[in-house]
Length: 465
Image 1 (cartoon, rainbow, N blue to C red):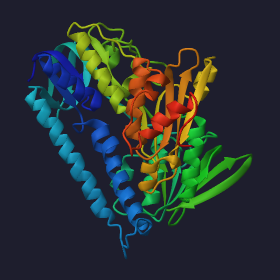
Image 2 (image 1 turned 180 degrees about the vertical axis):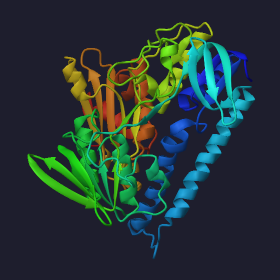
Image 3 (image 1 turned 90 degrees about the horizontal axis):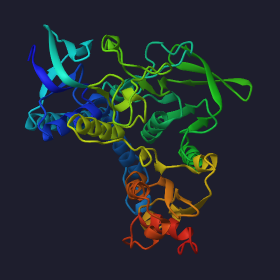
Image 4 (image 1 turned 90 degrees about the vertical axis):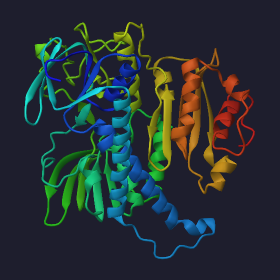
């Protein structure tokens, strides 16, 4: 492959990169995909997929603990954490093999190595035994993101976990402090608590999962406390100390200095764009000043003709499905189509217990924009299907523009929220109205009926609450 010229070269094989490669293959473009570490990137190997494997194992174990509520007696159930890890690894390997197979079917060349720019259309790739150069008419940067850090004294101590190393623990700790109550932190909080770990979350802001509708975040806080997760909001971590057999976290809350101790500390303070070693200056690609993200327009073009960027490295919305869509948009523009990204209807799914789904504007955002809006809500506890599944927690909120009745946002917390959000994403994307939802028959008994009831609440009121 040395000195070969391609139509498209893609740097990074996460969801943005490999999806772009698959679309390029569909459209007949001579394409190469370059990866420095593992096919599938963070999402498949150390993010979305392995954490959801953990989520499911944790849910099953929690359900077994409550089996008597369903008329089933289970005695002496034990968690085999090594088996949980093996299951996670098996799922990851199967999916990675699947992606590799698909790339092969689309005749995508693969190069394992670290890529850097030599010039606008030339890349150098450092492999284990050699360094090669390739040329490409178009290059897509899809290098993703890396774990962020904060300048907290002691945050770099040995044995402090991040979202990657937490998935490779040999055994469960008895206790854990999670620094950061965002999406990553709270998903891990519920995972480890359901596994039986004593969990404390220390969050700098006054709300968990910032950016999510405040009522939904408050419901999540209550759910965490019901499961005996200790939540410390408005708490700034000042220092992390290593004791003989534990860590001590010093934090300030409401003007008072406090401490918490645990066997393990997990840093979950977000992610940042990854551009290290790309030598983007050789191609003249512009980066943002604050986060060092690759700057792109809605066609995923950088300031340099023929160079595109997709996924977390653009710092738009750090979600795998956004990266995948951006990858498709970039390739289609390369192939002569005129496509643009539209971020108004991007679904968010948070795999806590219960799950959270969001799309469009939150109530706070609608208020900030000066929109005359209405809210329709419905409690999950009033759903027959939810009750039959042994759940009661949760609620749904639909937000409409008052004059047009168009659905401009939705947020829900409850069982299967990550699936229910798809209908509402379609509604926001197509500009559907609450009346459209009211006139749509929803199957009974299903969790989707909460969507219908929330739409009814925007008219004459819900029928079943």
